[in-house]
Image (cartoon, rainbow, N blue to C red; front, side, top):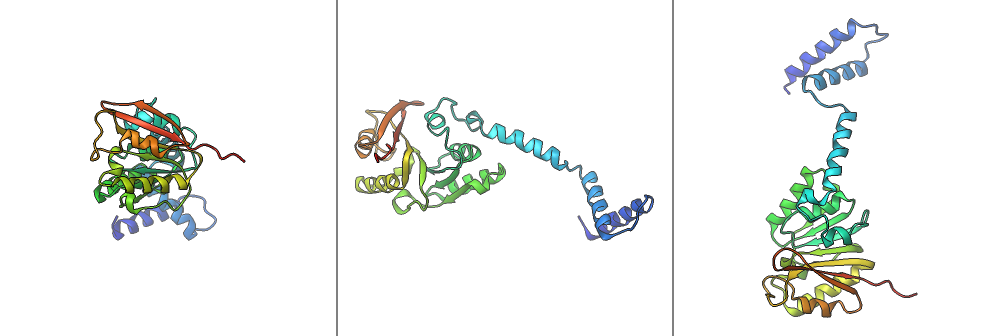
Length: 236
């Protein structure tokens, strides 16, 4: 809005107030009237209306299907009680899991070596009003380490792409050490008989890395399987 337009609205506000019963035409009163006129002309919603719309939108964001996630997916079930907790999402091929978890109240760290993928997640978080709950790092898991305790780790098949067996072992060890008791690791992998080092983490290798954790595997779409490992609570 130009300076001339603002001055014109100010003059109009003063004229409106002069016609009303005012004890004193203070600057504060004029500012309030200018705000009212601008809000009316731009058809801006009131705070109450904005809040109602925002809460309705957040309610939609908390539904997994809004992000293209099956409501019965292991991700949804395993991290149902992860509000106010830290979750790592690695290999962010799509922003859905990161934003779904953020909408559910998680503090999400998205790690992806491709800069455009990180930017996509960050932009989507900004558009959804979830920026404060999502932070992105342009890095691969081989050169990154968590700076907070993790309650959950979610990895796509590409999260370990390009890493050697030794690198994968070291990454898993680092993530396991950063995960609190009761925390969950979810790794989407390739079904038995179709493993490829390029496509992700071989299932049998995953099983060997998570000895001592409670493990389960579920088939998902196509040849994909979701590997889940829950860290057992330490015995006092």
